[in-house]
Image (cartoon, rainbow, N blue to C red):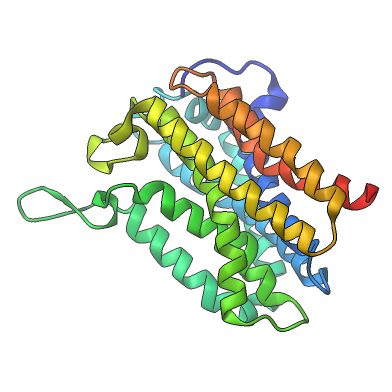
Length: 289
């Protein structure tokens, strides 16, 4: 990670992954806003916040003993706070497990495919001659897989928890509405990672270049904004259909200014913050309207 983050609060938000965990909860609560009974979804949002913090923490703690630990500022921060993070990650993981346990019968059919896909993507498989094989070698899959997993976690599972039954086709359709937003943001992170990503990953910026990737990300943002405006207007939230555009405008500005050399705050706070800003804009519109 390039650049240096000096403020201790920002270090906890970025390196401790508190900010992205908040983004997970915000995306789930955005979905819960339109459910008939959001109680279970709110419990799930808290569990997902704790689970995301714990999951990121486990992966970072596992890497602190590796040879690359002194090359990255976030891993150096984890080394400096290793025992504190061990305790916090353990407590967060245990709390998430307790909160999710009663919800498991409802969500396991959707959660397991997401976990399996993630495992087969992040695990590097090689053939007998040393050539990479598996999901990691599929062009553009990195961003698509991230978007699909976020849509399952933030939309499909909360819809499945709703007291009002939703058909499978409805759950799939509403989940797909969230995919373009996450896909656009994932492409921005691919731009950030372009210098260090293995060319075999065939990410969008590796194939189309930085400017091409930004154009594609902007297209997905426009698609997402159009879907959400039509959705909100269909539900009668006219004011929210306007206020949500402020969140998308924020995302579009960040997209146009994205480049690999940006400091950690740009991506770790601002770009991830789009996933918080858009739900906030919706909530403001619903309250005002």
